[in-house]
Image 1 (tube, rainbow, N blue to C red):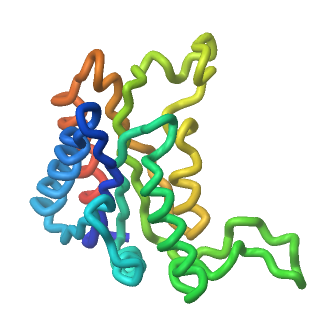
Image 2: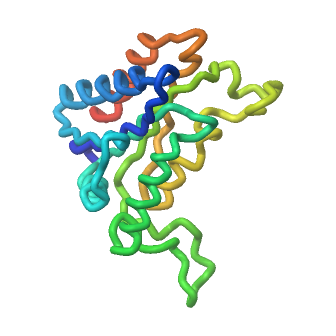
Amino acid sequence: MIIKNVLIINAHQVYEGFSNGRLNQTLVDVATTTLEELGCEVRMTHIEKGYDVAEEIENHEWADLVITQTPVNWFNTPWMHKKYVDEVFTTALGQGRIIKDDGRTRSDPSKQYGTGGLSQGKKYLLSATWNAPSEAFGDKTQLLFAGRTPDDALFNLPANYKFCGYEVLEGHHTQDVLKNPQVEASIEAYKQRLTALVRG
């Protein structure tokens, strides 16, 4: 599928004096500018500023690519992002939009769980900012993640989209943002990634 329509969801939640959201907003701005320069139309939802559930369902149906831009707060997205997901996808399920069911039926329960999505051909990309350094991942001697990748650690986020039929892309992770930030390198890599994605 050619990517022309992109929905960017900014999941950042402000914690005054600790996390004001500048880096996540910067990455939203970088993605928006890059994608628009490539000829894409971009819609943005900043969850903290409010959203309309019906409009968000329509945005998901419209978009060829959905990007979630989020900080990693206690190994997940901020709580209001979970609220957004619950409201948008539960309403969509009830309306038979984005997803119809879990893929199984009572007459044939052997069908694979997670195959009832209606969003085949669409793509999903997670872009996350971490305090954790890259060295904490992919190394079984590391205590916390024990060899897992950043995508493994945040599996529940793209799994929601995969459940709905999206192709889940490898995430973009900006790491070590508090103690050893390499923001410019991450931005450049993100631009290159988005360009390659759109141009195929």
